[in-house]
Length: 218
Ligand code: G3P
Image (cartoon, rainbow, N blue to C red; front, side, top):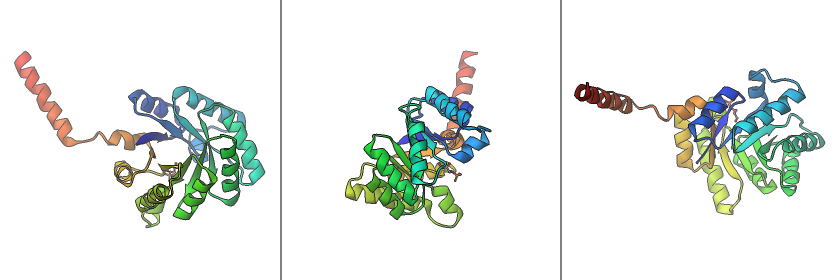
């Protein structure tokens, strides 16, 4: 499974990259706003900086909702760096734009996906990634992980190349459930990635090893 970090915070991206386990980054307009990045030039520069920090794919989301606008924005974003993946919402003009980008060899991430039908159209249009939002489904008493299972099964059955990128991950159990469901990628907050390491037996075992070593060697 690939790990992407879901943030526009440069310190967190550097920390995850430094761990040696990072495969890419996803951002969205809310995450950019959280970092106070505003104005087109600053936004484009921020994406370039992220691409310099990591080696893998970096999702950059369009703001336009009409077909022509999505195409113009997406082409500008894709020209920044070959690592850029144009993130496009799962709406009618978005699906049409994903089809266009796929014929041009521009990578895409179909975002705001909440149903198998949306994921089906994203794959048929040739999306590189599809992003089902599992946390937001859980928030409204729907089963987010179940959606990952359904999409993975559908893509395997029909042999679609689109990678299932589990998004809106809130905690470590979501990551482990996505592993079980067969997601190709999980995009997570840094806390959820590092949280995978937490185990009381690791902590107490290490404490014992170190104190036993000290007893014999002091
Ligand atoms: O990748 C999409 C993600 O950023 C949404 O997460 O926590 O806002 O639902 P959240």
